Length: 397
Image (cartoon, rainbow, N blue to C red; front, side):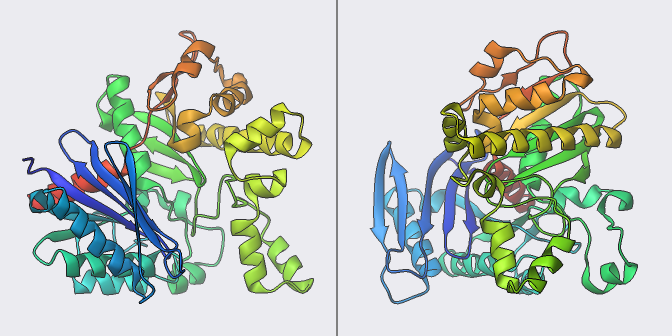
């Protein structure tokens, strides 16, 4: 049996995703999801040989621990628990403290909790999941891999806000960036595709999913990224507004909105959902647009325009550009969105290869531009593999 298996856990406030990753092949040999934690319908589900299984959690509380305990039982049932060599945990926010993967101990847990003001929906939940896993797998080394770590190479001119230095020194307000494991993975894969050492490669990585971000990668390192102090900044997303005049927040507060109402509006009711008035799902937007829905059409146009604007602006951060990389759920699968973005970039010489763009879906990678065009490509991301590999590398360090 393989000695390269790492269990990857992504613990959220009301959910817990898990995947058993073979760090040699990058394949997920088992994966599943615990969801609706804190509610009567809390469950853990997984697939084996294409068949979905589900286990209902009881109402005694601590659904994170219940979910991890059920995962342990599942691994025992499959006869593979003893083959797992480490646990890797995704952590959204490492602030300036964590610039690389670290082994989890009580001190690390305390420091992640101390960063909760920067990611109040994520970091406390990560700690709950890590404690549950440490209880369930007391003999295994556990590692924390941070979304923000890849972006710690940004220069001060990229991460500093045009605000009083006091806000940075007292509160840590700066650009941190997210989706780091995804941007890291696809840039390494893209370097192979352009046949250059990653240390000499330059890309603009475009991670388009329900959350979305762009990253300028110079000589293999992040030098700018669109998400900011929190994941709300930058691109328009599924339900997040992206960049917005901050005075709008003051305006709404003066109109009687509560702080929570403003937060919910900008995080949960904006983006594709807010503009279209229909859905946050890209597929639903495109279907409605094809049926003539004005709100969906505007949402599609706005989304593609803003992505193209960011790509264009990030050329400033690079001396040369080897390729634009599209990745994540929308970036990997939505031919119409990629096509429209490339059309918006025609001033830079980008020309879509329609057949290649149509073929680059559902796990297929490839260049989607014509031979006489600057290069744009699609590379499916694999954040779980990055988490698993970095955990394995630290285990054997």
